[in-house]
Length: 359
Image (tube, rainbow, N blue to C red; front, side, top):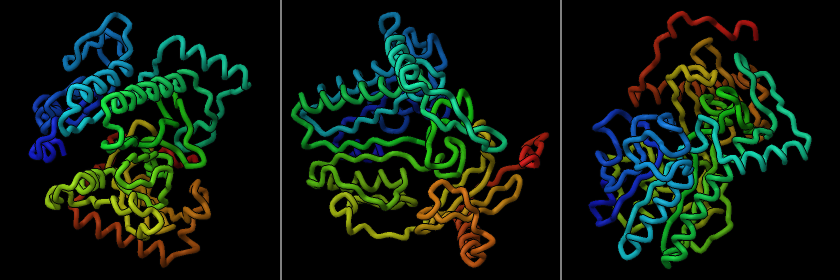
């Protein structure tokens, strides 16, 4: 995407988490003019982590104790102000709210006091082979969210101050559902099931807010789901540029949904393939959604689960036995999808023990 916009004269900027390979595969190797903090690491694991000195070769250390989330917001705001007279692509990929769970002390104290005031306690429900948090009661995580919100505010302030707020598209989303079953299990995704690393809705359903002043539809909602792979063709279309279908094979433009949310077509078949032994407790599998129906095929142990997301958004009731034709049709679509895309399949995990037998 950065390379495509660069060809149209856009200045391009990346800040934050990259995590897409070793040196030679960093943001600057994929068309970004500026890279602040993007390297091979999945979290801020060097130096003092979320506080300067960062120990990150892609970002200069700030004053001791400077907060990384705030710094990334400031860097993005500064880029916007410096490029207000030309088109630009700014990609801000916060390390927050990824682990390690750390936040400024004053914010942590604020939410510790709130937790105490509300009488909240940590509560969990079974999600074999793990447990899943069911209450928003983690003070550090709440502080991380507020710091992220404040950093987003810096970006919006920069757009306002530069006179660009009515001529800039802003997309806010997440790469996965909240971390609810591992590494401190700091959040909950209820009413959706499980979280990051799982094919249940808690793992793959994420927020999406789009601010596109050109549509004049502020405050409207669209219930039709989209993929993150749709952003590339959508942003090309929204900025008046030609589609590049050889590059975005599995994405479509949802610009029409933004322009007329009530007329968005429904019934798109959507697939998620996860050939991965995640450290959050999930296991390899593939899911397909078609309308209200969602089917998950787990590989270890082998299970096929069918859910009616309209009646059961929490995916509690497996209907595969009651609806064998629907389950069979969706299973066939998964098989075709894996064949057509030449999707990789995992080997069985070495020394794997079937943790689900006790379920």
